[in-house]
Length: 319
Image 1 (spheres, rainbow, N blue to C red):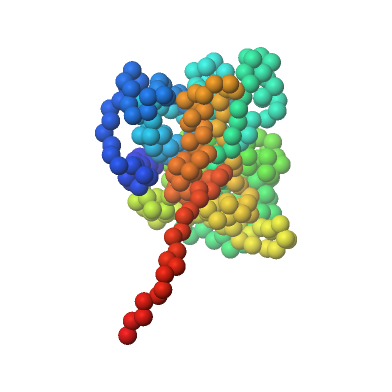
Image 2: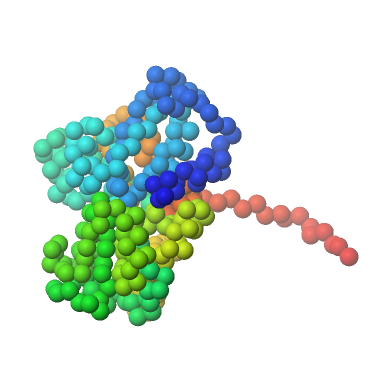
C-alpha cells in the first residue's frame, strides 16, 4: 500500500503545479526533443530507500517540465548509493545527511571525484505506536533508557525499525550514543510495512519509519494508515530550556525542536558546464521543487515565496 501511496498525490501535483497539459511521450524517449531543446538525455538518480514517495513525485514534476529528459531512479542503502555514484552509474545521489569530510576526501583521492552538495529539504524519522500506546510520560531521557538497555526488560517497549533503512538506525544510535549490537531492545524487520504491522499488533512497541511514509495527511492511503497506528510524541527542551512536547510534523521539523530531523542532500559531480544533474538539483532547491516538498508535509531548505494581492480600493458600503 505504501509503495503505491504516492501515485494519487503525484497525479494531483501534476495538475496543481503550474501545468497546462500532459501526455508528451518524449519525456520517456531521450532521442526525441520536446519543449525544452537544451536539456535532453537520461538522468540516473540513486536515492535513500526511505525517500521513495517524495522522490517519485519530484521526478514526475521534473520530467514534465523537462520533457526531453528521462529520469531513472534506484533506491538503495548508503553503501550501494556511494558505489553507483563512484562508478558513474548514478549522476545524482539523494542522501538523508551530509557527506562527511572523510567521504569527500576518499572520493577525491581514490576516484578523482569532486562533489557539489546542496541541502534541499528537511524530513524526519517518525516514531509510531499502537493506538493504545500511552506516550504521556515519554521523553528523551526515557527513550534513551530504552535504547541503552543491556538486557531485555519486559516492561520496556520493543523498538523496531526497517532493516532497509540503515540510515535511520545509524542516526538513532548516534543520538543515543550507543554502538550497534550493544542494546537488547532494538530489533530489525525487513520492511517499513513490517514495522507498521508489528506496531499495530503489539501495543508495547515503538516503530521508527521514514517521515515520508506518513507526512502527507491529504493522501488517502496515509489517512487509512493513521487508523492503524499513531505518531508518537515526546517531551524535550527547546533552545530556551522550556519543556515542550514534539512529534514528527512539519512545524516541529521547521523549528528544529523534534530531535530526529534529517537534512535531505543532493550530491552531484562538480563541473564547470551546465548539466541535467545540476538542473535537477537546482529544481529541487528552487520554487517548484520546494512546493512539492511543502505539499508533502516536508520543510524545503528554501521556502517558496508567496504573493498576496491586497485590494487597496475603497470598501463598498452595503446596507
